[in-house]
Amino acid sequence: MKAASNLSSSLPISPSHYRSTAVFTPHRWIASPSTAVGDAFSSCRTHLTRSPQHRYSLKPLRCNVSKTVPDQEMASTDEQDPRIAKIAKAIRVIPDFPKPGILFQDITTLLLDIKAFRDTIDLFVERYRGKDISVVAGIEARGFIFGPPIALAIGAKFVPMRKPKKLPGEVISEEYSLEYGTDKIEMHVGAVEAGERALVIDDLIATGGTLCAAIRLLERVGVEVVECACVIELQGLKGRERLGGKPLFVLVNAMA
Image (tube, rainbow, N blue to C red; front, side, top):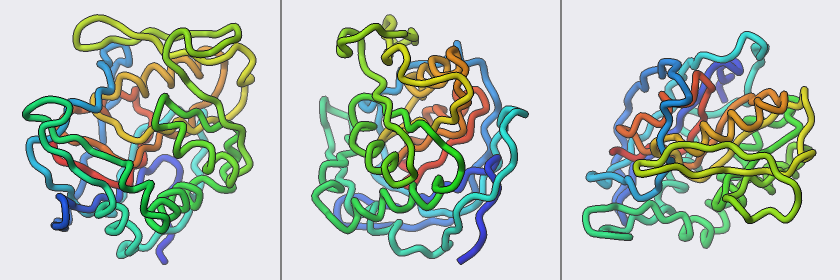
């Protein structure tokens, strides 16, 4: 096992998969520039890839983080970790869904594979255990699948970040831009406290709008967002660049 980089580094792990075929191509990712969060667009899962290929890589990526975030050593990982390829193979790609020309990244098949699902959770837990994270904020809806088991394993509370009018109590909300119009993300007032350290998790990052809104919402109430984490990243949609310099950790990298 090789020691991973410190907290200001992200360790993308990206296999290739389309149906039953896996193509692994080593590559190096490019660090994202810090951009204005206000320019974010919606994190749409329907803006998917023309190519079904994923790439396999474990090259370290150094991201810009706030100076208030201290450097820390992250969990160790193996550059040839066999779990990554199995996770990629468990994700089904469905062509022409929900409309023609779209390749949909279907994680329901990953959830049916007990070993791959467990390995997915374990990889996140290995990265964040012992990093003084007290909040795991999961974005509706698939962030609710991966967030709670990670939160329990690292000893953090889980905070759901929901669409408007889904939470029953008093809420605080953050608006973000869609391709046509706007939307909001909300969480309960009092769910988090100033000074807490949070991980924001979702299943997939596309254009990054929802993740950006989640970061802004947490930071408005004084929470330190340590990192964002997703199972899948769609390259080419520049979602990583819209995170305002926050580090992003992903397991599977889908070409876009």
